[in-house]
Length: 432
Ligand code: NAD
Image (tube, rainbow, N blue to C red; front, side, top):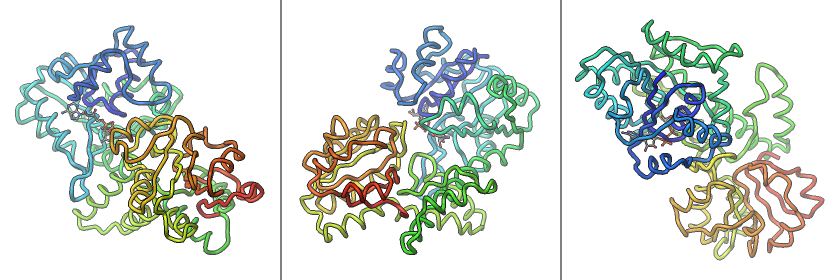
């Protein structure tokens, strides 16, 4: 099949590359010229495990190419994916300007039937809006399908190639058949393609992300309560996670959720509910709790240094919003950096993949270390913000030797409390 993917970010690049891998011819379109030039020269623009090898193979075999020209990109495409940004607007609602602009352009460009697929996370009713935007100028027939994406950054290729399920919202039999054919190679193990109407598909994505954000937040509140009641959240997690109705996943307490999806999607769903005159109380609570949770360790740090962080140097391990990605959007680390700097502290950070992105955003407000241990040199405490595997079993003797105070603040509960005590380290974690 000939496919076009409009928007070549985390979702678009993975979608395009993976569909090329299953034998389609894919053209990815982006307005960012620097990004497209880099992709055209054979370099991947994001860090995503497993992506580079598939990307290189499909470029070599001429199934994957890139352009900034929308008209050229969608020429002869049977399916056109919109993997465009939907950032929060000023009122929290998803900003549809990127999606609707491309839809409008497509109306002028399409010269034969195509299926236009909303892959971006978009509020209920967007498929209709996209349809109307194209229809204004369209000279040919087309269908608009809602096909939300559930991939997780860090395991995006695996998630895309072996999805738990594929959700497709359409009422067109023709579009349904085309989408079924496209996805068939990815669901050979029997995972379902769930067909539904467009509005339900759109809401499914927000419901999934908001449910997961609520699950994490619930555990973070249990952790906060554990600290007050003298319980251990790890034990509570194991105790409840073994109940199959609850499940083991997404129960780890920490310094809150971040990333490009949960914060904006919870906010957007709350706004959609409000617009529909429904007060979605639980979502408002989730957002409130998460805001305080992100900088919770600052209380411990301030307590330890008697509210005087002026001139202190804090080593920070982890900047990405989660491991195995270079994505720093809404990363808790950034909120902590801001809090530390405004309290007069300096930050020396290390992250295996995300330092370039942080440099691009905040430049030399902090210093960047070559490796985890260099970040500790001359530091007064260590803060852990991301659970990269490399931080899991560090050399604690070196940590003790390098830090002026034997102090670790661990936002991801990486170490055993008993072991830290035995090593003579002052250790703050979440809910233990
Ligand atoms: P991104 O910001 O990484 O990528 C978007 C790309 O679109 C950018 O490269 C940008 O230059 C490009 N773009 C903007 N306007 C354009 C235009 N007019 N023509 C062509 N390209 C244009 O965003 P992302 O993380 O890939 O997310 C895309 C959508 O997918 C969002 O709605 C997001 O909520 C959703 N989503 C993201 C994830 C994730 O893990 N990142 C997972 C599921 C769903």
